[in-house]
Structure formats: structure tokens, C-alpha cells
Length: 432
Image (cartoon, rainbow, N blue to C red; front, side, top):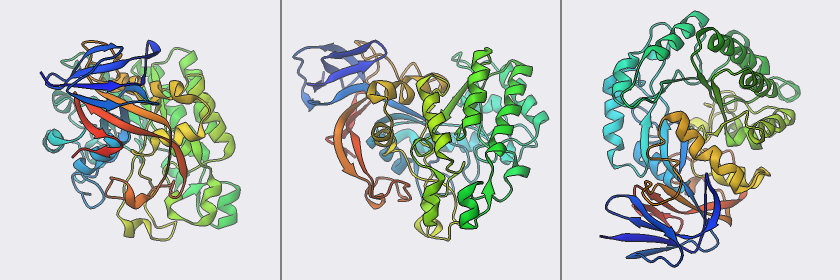
């Protein structure tokens, strides 16, 4: 039996924080023991670090199929592993999109050698067009648990009602429910907006997308959840009123969850004053008041998850003028550091939002986000919370370099990542 010992760190999970080494069986991928003075055939130094359950991302574009010039499953999984992620839900807006068993099977085949678990999301509708339901039964048979039309959102309320009812009627083999996820805004109101509608869009002469475009969609979908009794996950909240609506819905007992991205917790629409297309995002960057409300929503439990919204683009696309560039930023490698640097919640406050809470929503709790104890799968991240590093897009593992945090010095980095017992990141470097 070959073993790996993670030595000299703190252990942080659902049960709290304590000192201890973690001994892993490389062959089975399980934790053998957590205790003092453990040694393995290979020892990983965790001095000054904290060992946590591996992170789970609910929202990443991995390019493949159709956008391999910007990202592949292999390159995206390497970026994820370097960011401490042991599982990633790959969004379905590929070409062709993940609305068929064929596309999902191809993604799963490509993910067989990835540095983390890749769990494809499926579309809600065929072609993400909002007209005909995707074959959710066939996709769920392949393990798909989260469904989203991503970005544009489902515009037709009647269609979304049917989508929720359909999801509620399907029984999965593992007992994990199907999750309908919505990211989008009222298209008629958002129109061609490329940034938040407000003071800065007026100053800059750029078309704005009002906060109400998102909030009306959230309000409508909460009504549909109440009508059908079927839960929904709200992706990429960006406004204060959206947070308030989710808070009220949870207080009334509605089965809803919500996520926010690191960039919406850190940046405001003032960044767009540079006309730098790195700050063209969807949803757009909002006001400081919105940022404050999103942060409050994390602290009080209104928002369940920090999701990267990793959105890679080839350089020539992001070098276009602001209003012509595609929206999005890469985020798998920077999510931990951005939130640890800019939020006043500490590692103990962040880890649930990055690990076991998204794992629960994605139906991945058998393998990910588990307590660090004997017999648990060894899907782990070892975080150095004091490590400072400067963000350079061209030095990230992603094929794309479009980071909204270019040039920022951040605090906090993953030193080691263990995926099913194997160290895929050791001493800040991917091992393959």
C-alpha cells in the first residue's frame, strides 16, 4: 500500500478546526487516519496551511466542445485543480450545446483524464432556445443533475413552469434531485446593455442594463417555485434587490438556493471607466451598494455558494472595443484568493461556500465536501492563507488570459490539491 501524508497543517471542515496530519491511501483514494505525527511513503508539507475539503464549482465554462481555442476540459481542469477545486460543474453553452446524451457523453469521455471531476450540466431547452424541453430523463441517466439555459435565461414563464414541473417528476437512480438553475434577465428590458445602467453608463456613453432586468426575472421565478413547489437555484446574483428577494423567499420556506461570483463581490461598475473589456461581464458589475448587499447575503446565509463563473475567451475577442467584446472573466485559479483578500469572513467563513454547500446542491456529497475523517474520499485542498501572489493572465493555466484581476496582488493560494487520493497539485504546481 502506497500512502501520502499531509503534515503539519490545521484541518478545517464541518466539524470545526483542529491540528492534525492526514494520511491517505493512494490506491483506494480514501483517508486512512487523521492524527498527530503521521508519515506516509510521500509527505506533503502543510506547515502554515489549512487542509480543507476540496472545492466544488457550480458554474464554469470549459469550452469543449466548440470553443477549444479558449479552453479545453484538460486545461480547465488544470486551472480548477490549481484553484483547489476537486469537482466542477461544466456549463452547457458549448457548440453544440449540452442538450443531448451524445454531447454529454462526449464531455464525460474527455473528462476521464481530467485533474478534477467534471460534471456536465444540461440545458433546460433544446438549443437553449426556450421552446422545447431538453430530454432531461436521458441526461439524468448519464449523471446530469443541474440544468440551465445559461446567460440568456428562460424568457417564457409558461415554459419555465413546465420545466420545473418536469424536473420535479423525474426520479434519479442516486436519489439526488434534478436542479433547475436560472441565470438571466428580462431580455426586453436588458436589451443591448453592456454594463450596469446608471451614472457610469451615462458618463461613458455605453448602453446600460438596469438592475430591474435581473430582479424581475428573480421575482417571476420565485413565483413559479411557489406555484409548482419545485426548487430552483439562482445563478450569478448581482443586485441588492435580488438578494432581498431570495432572503424573503427563504424566510417563507421556498426551496431555493443562490450563488454569487467573486468579481461581483469585489468590483463595481466604476471599473468600466477604463473602457477595458476585461470588465465587461454578464451580469454586469453593479454599484457599491449592490456589492455590500451581496457580501451581507453571504454572511447571513441568503447566498449559499461562491461560484467562479469562469468564462474564457481567446485574446482577439477580448481585445475588441468594450461594447463589442464578449462578456466574462476566467476565475478558477483566483476565486479563493479574491474572496479571501477582499472579504472579511476568513477562511472558515469561505470554505462552506466553496466546498460542501455547492457539493450538496450539485448532488456530489458522496465524494466531495465530506468531513476530513477516516474512510472519507481524499478530495482535499491545502490552502496557504498568507501566500501573496500577483495575478498575470498569461501565467494562468487556462488557455485564456482574460482575468478581471490582472495585476492585482492577492493573498491566499492553494499549495496542494488531492483528487481521489492523488496529488494533482503539489507545492503550487500541477503535477501533470
